[in-house]
Image (cartoon, one colour):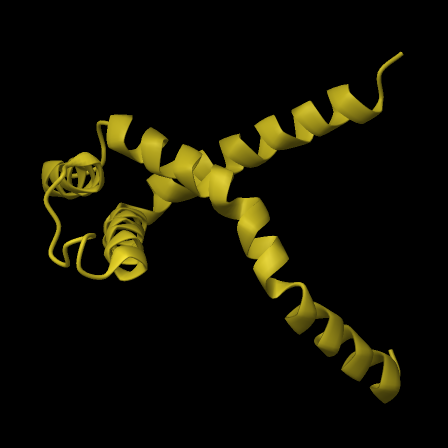
Amino acid sequence: MTKNQNEEYKKLKRKYFWLRLLMHIPNFFKLAFRLVRDKQVPLYLKIIAYAAFIYVLSPYDLIPIFLLPFIGWIEDVIIFIICMKLLVNLSPPEVVEKHVKDIDSEMKQKFRQYYYRK
C-alpha cells in the first residue's frame, strides 16, 4: 500500500467510525445478555447490569428530565453504557471471547442465509 492509499484508508476509517459503532450496538447487547446469563460471570457484575437496566426504566433520575430534558435522557444512556462496559471488561476474558465468537458465527450464518438464498 502506498503512502497516499494509506492516508485515504485512514480518512475513510475515521469517516465511518460512528457508522461501524452503530452497526455493532445490537451485538453488544447480545453479548451483555449472554454474559448476564452465563454462570462463570461473577454475581456482582450481574447485579450491576440488572441495576443499570432497572435505573433506565425507573422514573427516578440523577438529573430530572423536566429540568433538562435531553441531558436527563442522555444521562440514563451514559450510565447504562458504563455499566454494560463494566460487565464486559470485568468478566472473565475466556467467557467474553467464547460469546463473541458465537455471536460472530451467528451473524455470519444469518448473512449467508440472507444473501445466498436459492
